[in-house]
Length: 112
Image (cartoon, rainbow, N blue to C red; front, side, top):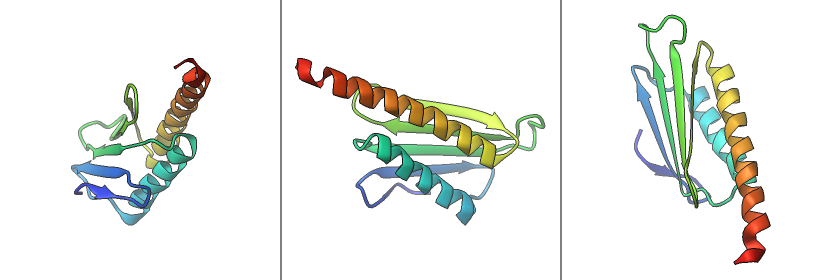
């Protein structure tokens, strides 16, 4: 999928390896990005890399998410059998990191 801007100005890049992304998975990715923006509004770019491999029987699906935000970028990846479980796990991990980042940003804002 090519880079595409979503309504809040974030450039999003979705890459699928050895699979085709269906509408349900694509919509879930956009929902995740909207959830991320609730916790941190300064997301500039989001990259989603999804892969399905028949060679890896134990963990055939992999998702990697890269968020370009002020300061160090956020990178999260996980592998497993179920897209639903994987998406939920990486989403919660990123939200936790965004909450921590937002808290640090707010608490250090007065020291500039």
